[in-house]
Length: 606
Ligand code: AGP
Image (cartoon, rainbow, N blue to C red; front, side, top):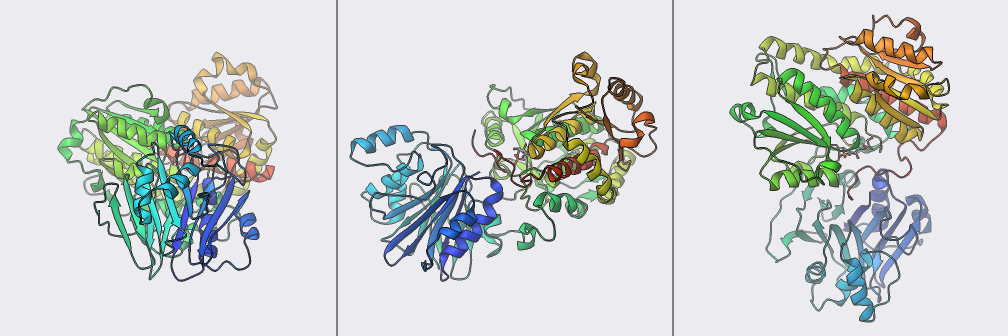
């Protein structure tokens, strides 16, 4: 959703801010703006629309070396230039950019209005600019503390003061904020992808922390002015990871790189001799792992669907009950937290508000929660008791692909470890390890069939509405397939358990409403085939996602084959053609694939 960048250094700030905002475009936004400090105060430029429109609107001479920028996703007030950030105090001295929501903005606006302040926007953020400006304190950092003391809500903020032009003051509470440490220059961002071209040395702020950032230095401290002395850590992300390269879209790039990223994720994590996984980051001893009697998985959207797939894997390999639930529901229903349950929060961004709240609720009630998270140092990763980093690299396209595959692999590793401290035999553990080792080549084999899958996708793209069906292991695959398809093609795609089709939805089957059926080679193949044939018999069209050697009979002309791996791991591979079907359907429809309408990459609001 919204994005923040900031710069203090020796170079002109504007091009660096614009470049940083471009890197944050993938998060979703409707307007953008920057403020740059110069000899005559702050120059603020804002525009509705894309960052390139903002860039075109900048004055030719904008030489200041200190500035902040923002991409806005409207929450308080529509997407207008007046509502775009940065927001300024009435005299223009203070400029503020803000991610998050100020819950008591209404009351603060009323109070400031009564004191004679004139507002120029509908936003909650503008309140902050006026509060900082009206603070009696001297140094900008003290003024910001003063203002934040009056605010209830979540925020990442970056603040400029035209009368203290050597610094940016930043603060975090519930929304990520990172400082990038350079050579006599410093960067600020809400997301590492905005910094990676400049530095790999970063400082993650914690909730309740602030920092004053100058060209030479930074200082971190709490709201009661205690220094926290945060030191930088090195990030693994490189500039190439956030470049589109030769690919037409980030989504295509992210699908294509899966063989390589999955191989990287597995490196050092497989213990063939003992048929188990090495997951030191979980911070759990074998005795502690063995004591869990249940697993509960929490995630949102696609992460939740892969969680369902993970729960099945855990039940099959560990033989303890495992269940996935949407974190967005869990957090609102006063959940029962049990001491012998292992809670697993799964998230690509590590910033999804609903999942982060679920983690806090579990911890508040004394539960043990580990994370399966992609973004290193993200909120969920840091708030969990331990975890497994997914190491998929930055995922820029809003529609998640490689991170979901990595989540599937992460669940396989967790299931392997939990299984081996219980009753999974060494031989079975080694069988799963061999399957995981084959996975990069298996993914590459599916990708090699892209042209044919693209042909089927083009055919499917003509339909206004589709079914995706699967059962047991195939059902989460169908759910994720439908999700991916609807996200970027804007077609109505509904997932159903194959077994449930006859209990209602068969009434909707007709030629114009095709079905994508997951029909793996497993104990349910015959039943799945029978159900798909019922669809054909009612005039429906079926694309089958299957395994080589399965006799699909009348479905044979529209089949996609995925290499057969181990039966417990097959669902991970069955998701790959779903990615390609969705991608190529959206290509055929000429849509904005990486930034689908109404969606954001990380949903940091409730
Ligand atoms: C995936 O394609 C979606 N954009 C969305 O459902 C996503 O998986 C969900 O919002 C959770 O995001 P997270 O993994 O960053 O927590």
